[in-house]
Length: 292
Image (cartoon, rainbow, N blue to C red; front, side, top):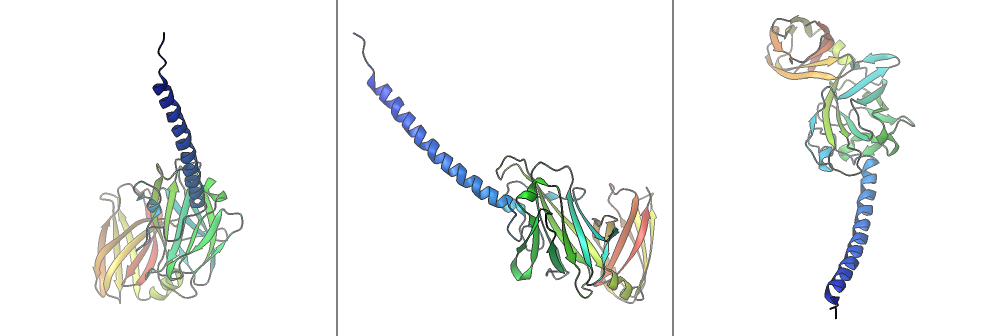
């Protein structure tokens, strides 16, 4: 007579029942997770740009934030003209783009003055895939919508501050995802894009006279300037797309004649740039053609 092994059969049945139960629970958990991730796809919560004192997208997406130089672009235009400085009270179109995008992408951007307070006002362009989110201390953030996360370019309008507030920095975080509907495997790019004030340049031209030269032999920018202002100096080099490609302290400045030789990044391409010289929050700008 054959023996009937009931225990293994019963064990298999119980295991299958537990597997079915666990599968059901897992489906509920997965559904809840996806729902929360879809909400995140619908734009990041405020304060994720990497601006001073802020978090960035890695708070919700695993991975390490990387430099957005050469990846993130912010272009500001007035009519058909690309500008690298703002006139107080003027309305500009601002276009953001992400190089080599995925099929699913995201971003968040904020415009701050030198005190890290909101600079200017934001208006959303209909059907641009963007939306506005309110943050702490009156800050306004532009981020993607659910429909906008299939884009790699976005646009909005920015009205410059009514008065000259000095340099305005757009802090931008972009997310190039792996399009797998989860929060891992994404790449976060952080960048800063600085726009000076035309009014400030005009006001300070009589206080700061600036001449620039370029020495291709050692890849240095020669900065000669005469100033009535003393203090710490910053040099910001911006390309004609409005992207900051170099931003560095160049030391202290004395009243009168000054000369600085500034070594530029080795991978900086030949082209026309705008050099913004900031001396103790007094600044002027000048174009320079760099030929390597």
